[in-house]
Image (cartoon, rainbow over all chains, first blue to last red; front, top):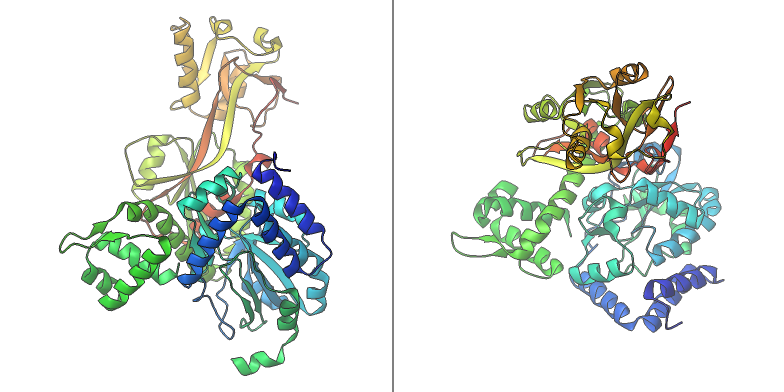
Length: 241
Length: 305
């Protein structure tokens, strides 16, 4: 495997982790371990940037449980505008921010979300994923993970910044990402090199957040059981408001 | 990064004075300084060189300014869109288009926009590049969709949308229509139908000049839809966007070794306040997958049905 390029090796890891019969957390972790084994320098760069973001409290100021989720109006993968308020008229909403179709952790996470979409519906909710990527790449993402849920484009990460979820990619990380073929400028139609922290929110029909997961360590995502628990836990919210 | 940090950063990058920036942002100076320091920490270096009377952006500050400004504008835009979306309020979109832009490329987006802003009023103008720049400059147009708008106005903000390919429009019984691509020298006896300000016509003429053809008869046709009738009558050969619908006994052939294509961009004016409708329109243009709509490459002989 050593004569393969890093991007090819990561592809193989991603496929292996996607095929694992294990909870989301285990699969994400397996991906991180694989990357560390195959590309220790890359993994160290990731450690550094994640620690840096954590040191500076990236994501801390994101909306909290009990806060009103700000309204959004964003295009879905077909170019139709979707607003949070129109979704809330139908049911509670799970909003998951993803970095993009190229990110292996997002792929593993989005695929798991696709698998549990029936459970989300059964629990009286619906799911939308928000990425900073243009329609073409959101469609690619949807096809790759067979997502039965819509993916919305947050162009230039404006909504993410509004939620204090935007992070800027350093030049060090940018060089590595470009080498891996992750030229996000094309994916985002933007040279900003800004990504959202991949957060998850569970929003009740009253617009109030009752589940929240925010971690600048993008290798970690909201556990599925926490997500479903927050969705089902309608009683506690009223007291939180 | 936090929204307020970016707001303070942008204010300070303009004012270059902590006291004044703090006043503009309605915060105390220590609060502004603290937010800037936090942002500097997260971005990994100083954004401002603090000198008495001479505060200025560092190289890093300069480097991150455009992306932070773009992200911040997008955030303001997201808020104004959310505020106007499906509300009763009146919204206006003044749009300037160059003449060869296909309306069918824009109409689905306009339909989406009309659903989002029920009281939307669109005013559309088609014109030459100088006319479009004028409209943008004097505020009569908020958004423009056009090929390259050349000029020295630095406030024009362009985003690439798609590549528009051009070929030569020929009558089906024309001697050049049977060829698999046309050589420049084949055009020696032809009359060319071009449009004023059409960069592709100019490109073709300059290439012809390079091979010694500098006295080709050139007709100027202002309205693109007048070309097919003229070509049909064998009045000449026309410069024509390959994706544009054709009727009649016409076809498009390409010129060998000559890339007759140009980028179509969406233009706005830097620093202007944009309505929710205008922002939504620009955003929808940018997110659209144009490869589904505008063919990126065409076979040499594209037969009109």
